[in-house]
Length: 110
Image (tube, rainbow, N blue to C red; front, top):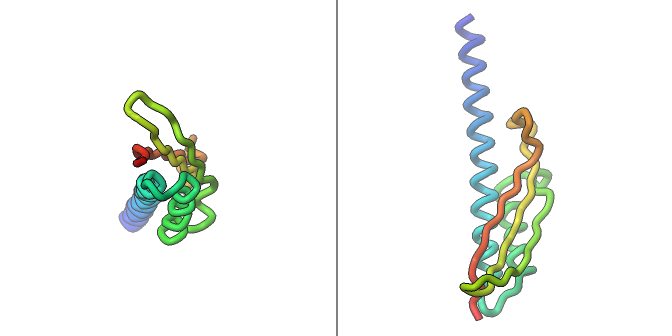
């Protein structure tokens, strides 16, 4: 009985670690891509491409489903927003959660 409990706890820890890794990778890639695309000599498409490259190097290519960008006007200035939609890996599938969506933004430098 103790072995079964230890196996269950180990699998739960692995699942939590994998889910946190994917979430942190999505957040980092989206924010880095937004900052990259907001530079004076770059476009939103450059930022989205940089986000895809970062995701390909950090998580499985089947995880990240969609990378979108939009430029939004705010009273403070133009903001480039990068949104990443990703599926959870099979081992970390949580009930009621089918995908994650992460959005990051950066002020556009002119």
